[in-house]
Image (tube, rainbow, N blue to C red; front, side, top):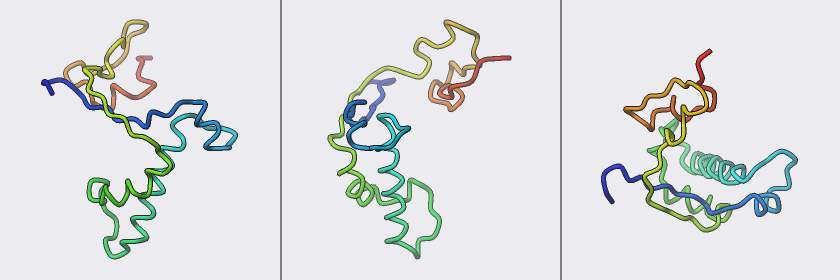
Length: 114
């Protein structure tokens, strides 16, 4: 891995599969993976009541993945040099932090100046 390369992990799901997996009126291909993570965290919390409130990094990721994996399907990891700044600021002026591309202000959907 070279400096600047990013590992993006995805479920490899597509919109057609999402439609068959989650028969909910308003959902997209990210609904099931997001819900699987939330369910996994709740299952972990129920199984570990004495731990109290913890940061996400303090959860046992192996326990959470074992709960979520049946809903996620195959996980795919790819190295890329893509950042949230790619193609940004071309159509309209945006408030971007070009020195730190992974800052939240660069991935929010409404950041144009008024």
